[in-house]
Image (tube, rainbow, N blue to C red; front, side, top):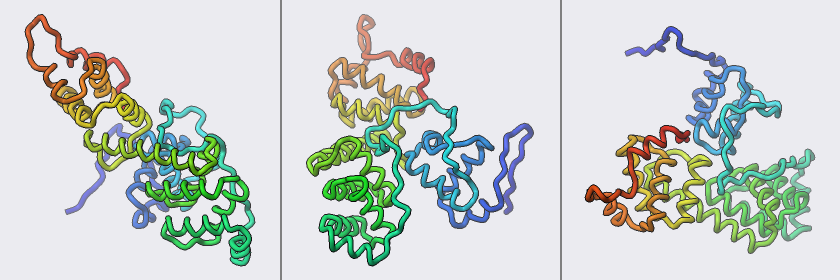
Length: 316
């Protein structure tokens, strides 16, 4: 059985370089998705932020996937940002560890094994961080890895105990590459986190938010992707209001029944309405929606809610 491409009159198309096709055996599904998106934009520049919003991934991962194709000569990156992004900007999510300043590059000079050994002998703090980092990340550092750690301590001024906490946090969320660790460490430093107490407090806050988001994804039946920034904002507001996962799931069911799709703004309107009425449980919300006398009003009018949603930009 043979398959062929369906070519439709008037349908859009874009070219795929031969070099890209030759890499299909080696690339991952994520790398292929990013390549197809970049190619579909023709000669328009793209950025990790645009890719992240379109494909519902985080900018850090988007950059790594784009860099894969840069390394193979399929894409090029000259540091010029897109002057007019196609998507409107969104507020940063609480969990994203993007730095507030440009990340300075480590020194060009590469350390020799002899110099690495000397640094370990002369500075007990560096030796301890390197030992803990290798343990936490489960690998033996190369000289390049060692240089990145030494630079963060000796050049950027990250406290050794804070850096260990950063590495532990990054390892815990599956981000083991040194570039991500470097960005996170500098973001924490820019935020004034320079003591072990402050670092542990930041890690607790991030882990709490991550755990809550995971619970929300479960009750909303979201699998195989991260939440985008706006969705994270909704999640955080529900956590602050003390809305239970069970109530969120009940609102989700109402949303699907009426719209046949997942809509965070729609669910948010239902939840805020229930919150204003003081509903804490599914039983309270369900009781309010039971048929009543004509003189009584339900907790919310789904038809009116849907009409309003259609007038708003509710698609995330």
